[in-house]
Image 1 (tube, rainbow, N blue to C red):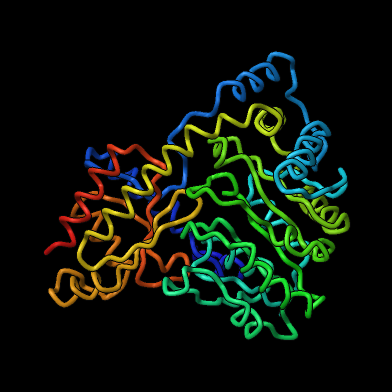
Image 2: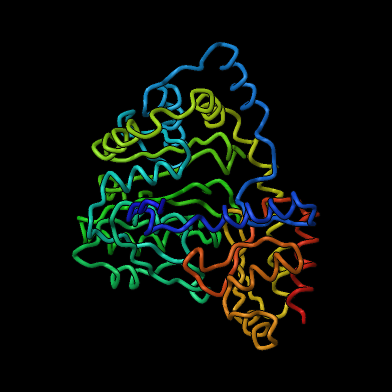
Length: 401
């Protein structure tokens, strides 16, 4: 029997490169190979105890049934309080939705607003799923290249040039995955001036790494600099990164009530409510002592400084400092060219480099092309300093040939 043709939608997508490389590295590790995985963006810290205690209490109290699709009222209140406390943004309960992770919130948002032919402006380097989520929604990703020479951030001029009559959405991610770039107040003001001139463009801001600050600088959402955009902006966040809760799968979004309601309708036909116990844990995270983040952030800062310094000492690599998140994104174009000219790499690209580092030295990194930036690669430094020291030693050995 011949295989039945799959959907056109599946044909438009590619498997998440981050998850694929993590799976390959895990397979090698299970086979007994000495592998250091730097691909997954997952803090190596345990979830803080008071959050776990809240979840245990919820189980003991029998809080194990269905909840409202958009989230339990007490968690929505905690989210509203968080936006007011941390971002000076005010929302009502019908302007907030809780999803099964931040990724589902982005999916629901795009499915709620995009139609065939709509264009989505995505600054590159970008988080791997933005473009594919646009494609699932039958929209067209419009990639704006923002290289290392402009610190991986889109300029107002680039935004203006990318806008067409078909532009429906701009996706902003600050702090950025994969680069750690953070838009300043002035940079957001310049982007806002362009958006004000185009009232039919919606804005999605992915603030998942808001609290993972590598520098002592304030965090700004575009609504902080231009409140008039609120009626066409959806702000997305979650508890995964700041509270080391990746597996709990809780993200949330806030925005105009009609968009949030549309997202709820879509969610009601997919997952229904997020896990009841995870919602209680997320409420404890957002409402509890925020000092629990500080040990993690302190460690991330130390690791960041070590990684950036080490990369810049390796021939063929150039790495600028990040301002947020827990990633480094070195420019490896010279290293790739060197290895290719010496016939060590069969192909002159970052995929070949990532494969070489994994096969030769047992270090798993994500090629930059997965993020729309050929010639770079991403590592996560959300792992131990011991692992990072050994990994950087191996990478230096692999590239110093």
